Image 1 (cartoon, rainbow, N blue to C red):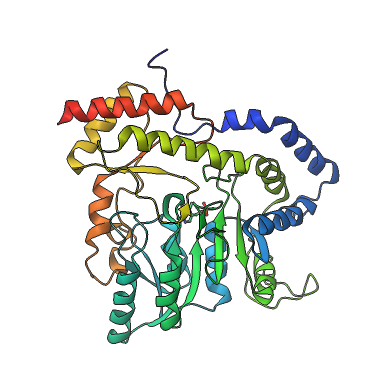
Image 2: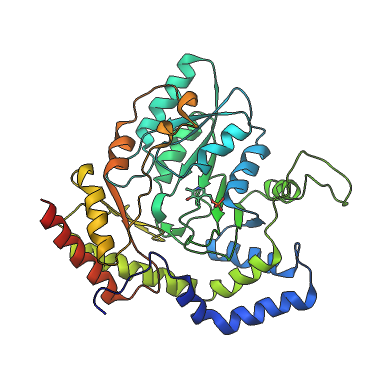
Length: 381
Ligand SMILES: *Cc1c(COP(=O)(O)O)cnc(C)c1O
């Protein structure tokens, strides 16, 4: 049994914990058959808004669509600069390009991996001096489940008149200075992709805002820009609704979300204790909690990453790389990058390695993973 394979993520175990509530919720939808914007969507929106301490929540089809709607609401398009970290998932940058705007990549903090507010200020000045693009928006990312430095990001963004979007796809449930994420920026986008801390059984997402007019606009945009009656079209929108069955799944999952977050924190602490001094463990953002979407260590040298993964794989221990390339080095973005060096994002992408972390990961397995990692590192040094 010692080398029985460990899953990178086990959604089946979580499903067993919520089985009765999940069945009840799904059966209710099958009974009323309101598959589009059924009552579960509104119930979930209300519960999520309360959970995050936000005034408005709008359920949408994914975080990618949420980000796109956030930019559409601000009429961002050709000639506009959208500032965002170079070290993130492609969706953060993709939405700017889809709307014809230009992503401007910003470097990250070498310890927390979050977008660097100082480099953001530098990049805004650079774009303003060049004069070819209008600085319009910032998409900050709460990477790996920890909050970005919102007080400093907002200060820099406000000075430049930027609209501020929180890509909170990985971090719903995390908090900063005692407040849950959801109201750190003008608008917050959350993902319910199955592997995220609060995951559905398919695609889903949500937008949070304090602005009632903006929330109404999001509701219109998610349904093709419709007005107060169904066939009145006010805006160019999209088909971007959260579907009822996913809302039902999320309502069941929400009943164990707090305990899931606590369980992820326990796993993170085991890794911290077992690995401190052996590798660079994640630096905690100060006065914050993490949703621990990802637990990523930093290896001393990128060259040992592949052999290390191979040794661990032999022992039934999966690892993953988020992200093997910063976005400005991806083929799709090469020609959209202005060439400004982003050395931290590049160095981190070569040395980062993610370990399994999820609520149903046994603590003994977390210890086994840390132990195997220690031995593998020793054998490679
Ligand atoms: C997952 C993710 C997204 C996209 O979320 P979807 O719901 O899959 O569209 C966007 N940004 C970041 C940082 C993500 O991790």
